[in-house]
Image 1: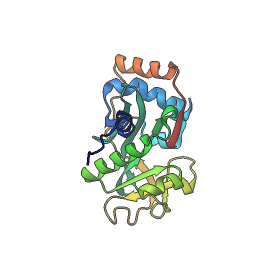
Image 2 (image 1 turned 135 degrees about the vertical axis):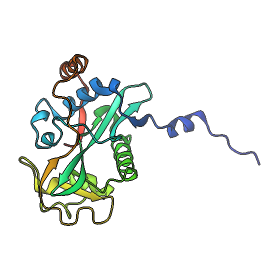
Image 3 (image 1 turned 180 degrees about the horizontal axis):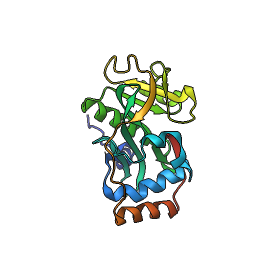
Image 4 (image 1 turned 45 degrees about the vertical axis):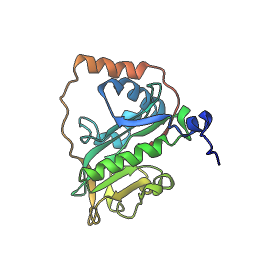
Length: 210
């Protein structure tokens, strides 16, 4: 009996049209444009942004989703916080280009981010997002009921995931930033990148986590 050969069409369909990798400096402009398109011009005034302003993301936990043509189509970053005295990570923002909906970009970013966080020894991850979406990754409000954010938020959207059992036991009070502080002023090149990101027309995107 002659074995059937895989057709070129079948092989193409099995090929993932994007890859997840660590964020690079060259991603900044595209990342900021995507976030502007996803969350709007007021995204810097959102409650969770107060946990990120002036802070560096957690090491190894800034990820980009890249199409095979080199275009950035997704981003996620995680940040060091104190969750009522318990060490944790705050996930967000997570954003995916609208053109790539249904390809699993968001899921791939989440899975890689959580795997890296666990491998690096982090105990828990917290986020502000849609409970039905994040339940598939194990996030619930069971451990975050006594936690607060530095601003207005919807209680049912504050979710947590323990990567180490008991990591959020007794977590109570305000979530505060603990990440390394960034220099007060950005180098001129970085400032230019930020300005370009704000003015560049970006594709529509779908927000998942603030």
